[in-house]
Image 1 (cartoon, rainbow, N blue to C red):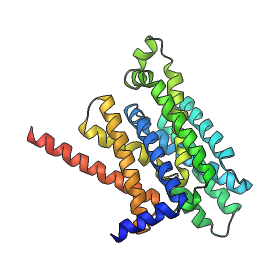
Image 2: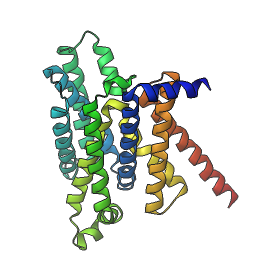
Image 3: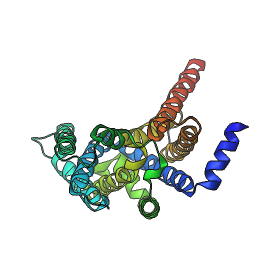
Image 4: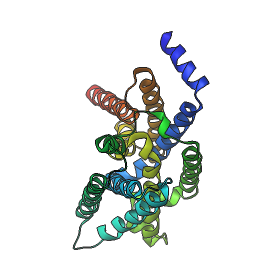
Length: 283
């Protein structure tokens, strides 16, 4: 009963907790929808690469003293998504090598800048907060919430409008191109939307944990389901439930929000693996 009373107090007396809860669920939903496509296309590495780029961009924004860091973080991350896609198609530089170059380079430059031009006396704390997410909901301002809602709506609308074309490009890119679908264009669309989600999730889970929101729900759903639609629906449910559980547990036990959400996703993944194994054993 004490835990329920604590939750009720937080949600009723602190509007920023409600804002963060809504933003967390929207981010988790968007990440899960794209996660299925990215995993099936073997593009899941893009999430990890772009999260490192976002960290570098965040460091640049901090060094320049910008109050609205999105002005730098969003364009640089989207530009890197385009660059990763184009470079990954180069026969001399394969996709995994392109991600390694861009992501590790951005991570190193960002870390170097934060040490050379510290924006506060606690550089280690700033780096840890950016990489692993903040331990406090206070980092989410009302302007961040509004921006997150608008961008999440754009992501959801884009996915709904182009669902069939994304489905075609996901499973058979050559056939999609033969059918008149601009496969390269939709690959670019997927990469850009992924970068938007990563930027949205920076404050909540940190740059190093974002890829977990994209990968774990999709892989968990694939343990039990085979159809594309079923996997997407199950992945969305898993992601939203884990996000809600992680945020609630972080409030109750004062744990880092991002890490708690990822641990919840991991627990569901191992549970679904166990269920899948038991199903296989009974056949």
